[in-house]
Length: 360
Ligand SMILES: [Zn+2]
Image (tube, rainbow, N blue to C red):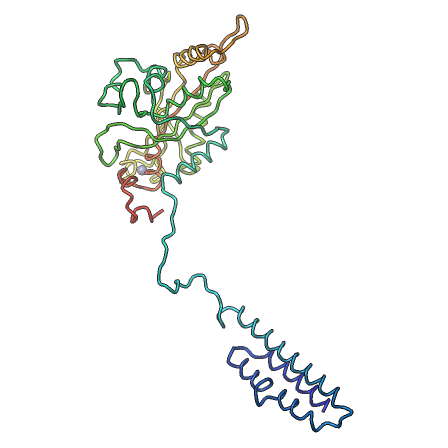
């Protein structure tokens, strides 16, 4: 009897372990643990064992049942966790109710802003913010934009009443950062944000769009630093082989001023190709830049004194144009995004058309 129990145990454990699918496993279970199985047979034959051995055989029979049940459970678990068999949890399977939720994604403008902030943070710039409702002093006066400048006409800015308007450029943040008494040179800041202009809306103009403003103020900052930063920025955003060039321009708040161009990242600046991005020019405009106009520094120094800045006797204000120089730049974020992704209509950014947004 003992030999029989030992043999059933050995063969049973082997058979459970060899069951390669659930059907086989259930058949093995019936064979050993079922109503007409071996274990049942052993238990029912205990009565015919001599009384002296009965107790031990009973113990062995119970042990046999427990060990075989354990072997069954072990193999059941092994089959369930194996791929492609049993009741495996499949996260890619559609839900039972049939409702599939849409996953959100990053808007292309947000993706470009994140990239810009990452690049400028690597170049040592701090990200700052400013209000979208501005007064004329921050939007025009302190940026050396005279009272009779066309940008100040009511049809070129969204006025909100006396002296207040929706900012038409992020350059306002330059003034706000420098007039803050808690800040001293050297300064290296970038300010991405929304700006407003009552432009006629078409494929390249919108009344609401985004800019990123940059400002670097320190002793002996030069045009060479400006060109180096913009060249590094364009290589990082558009690719390592992109070249930059600077064309003389005019802005009231920088002197000298320049327009920065990047070689077309699509046709690599090889002229004569029918490139839709640069219209065959080989270059695309990235934005305006220049050395901070001394008049801007003077306005900042005046405001800091009005705010109670105390200077040592005979001391020079920290932002005095004889003490510091600086450069500034402003890029259109929609424009950078359109160049990067080959988008040909600025209106797509605001229409909230999911067919457009799903492409990014
Ligand atoms: Zn091109």
